[in-house]
Length: 231
Image 1 (tube, rainbow, N blue to C red):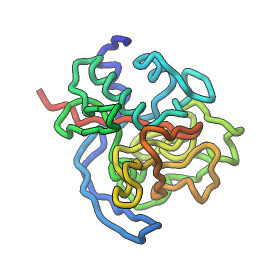
Image 2: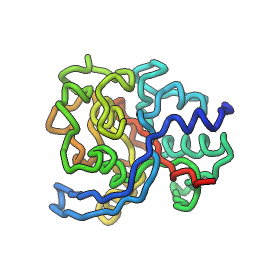
Image 3: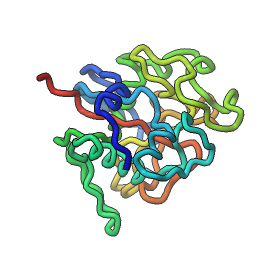
């Protein structure tokens, strides 16, 4: 596993301020409000270069160092989070039992994790209630402009908080279970991908699938962490 300086990792992140976000689920017609505490979110989806550095693996369908990692399951995404945490002496956020397919999140840990879906939507909307943060062609890689594959991160316009590719390119896994009573352990992913039509590429669109077995060529992730405490 690669060793990397703490400052290099810190530079990956954008600070997200406190606030609230209005959530909804089109399947159940429910709406709810979530308070967001300050956190840090990676400005890009995790690239293949970074993913491979800490896993010695790359299962992506489309290959390139600065392409987002994809064809990656939820469990593989959180395993990356733990390995990155350990590499710079942070406490891993996830306890993983692969045999039992059981995962426990330690919300007090100072390591890296997937964002909650409320954090993800709040960061995508940059504190607004807009379904997009600009004209879709200018901010996202979708079916109309992607050339039927992922594209290097950071080429489209960021949102007002400096986050790139929140919409389009690849969907992004979130920490949350979607609806345990109906879908069991299925986890949420957000944001739309390179092969999606305009109607699917919105800050409010929710999808879900199996955390251990589901992986596809338009699904990746970005990571979050708690703010660095003042000295």
